[in-house]
Image (tube, rainbow, N blue to C red; front, side):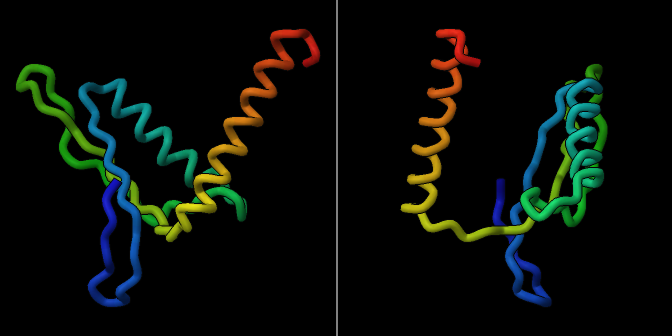
Length: 103
């Protein structure tokens, strides 16, 4: 992920770059772009734009790159840490519940 600034509006964006080593990688990356377009919900990050750079060529040992432009959200590190701990606790509880047959 890279952080970029629009030269005109000075708005910040996150740029996700997916390196594709073959046709299958490229299909998976393009599927991600497609899902961004299909899923419209306030709790799902919006994709502003995307692009495919070059094409993978196994004969030349070259790769392609899918670039996805996403919104940038400045996150308070303390809040991020609390959410991370909460998510890990929830995941651990689910795994534990499944292992003892509660779910």
